[in-house]
Length: 96
Image (cartoon, rainbow, N blue to C red; front, side, top):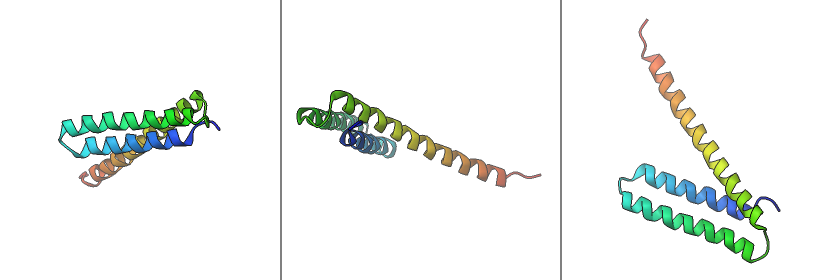
């Protein structure tokens, strides 16, 4: 079935994991190692779906695209919520 759920879920999970580690740590070396490791795992999961014959390459690529889109949508939603909270605090501190 299109898209590959395993590819989509693995890309969302490892993108999120890498993003939060990068955001919360100051250790660049750890972030780079984690990014490389995450990329390798995601690619291997996609290749395993193709190797086992349960998905076509287009299914796996579609799963990656859907996972990336989901991650970006959630990330943008988080940033909008943070912006609105800051704007609300700014408005409450205003003196008329």
